[in-house]
Amino acid sequence: MTINLTEAKAHLGQYVAKASAGEIITICERNKPLAELHPAHLSFRPRKLKMGSLKSQFQVPDDFNEPVPEFEAAFYGQRPQRKTRPAK
Image (tube, rainbow, N blue to C red; front, side, top):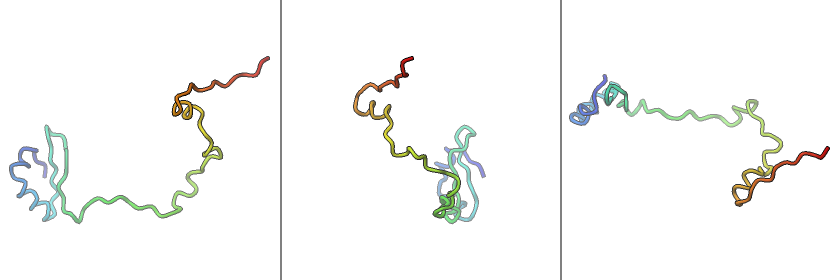
């Protein structure tokens, strides 16, 4: 069921009762969905990942803990030093 926001404000108790009975109610404003009322047992919960489930999908780079010159320069208020090219 889709209802307008003003309708939801006026008859919230009725729509909460319908939602607790199992009906999903979409609340819209200017025909754009804003929120849904649904029974509490249908709450969306984030999926929990098991430790190690992404084991082969990411590798920590070797220079992960190395300082980043641009960041340090900005953090300490210094200008970043440019890398110089060797003289020919």
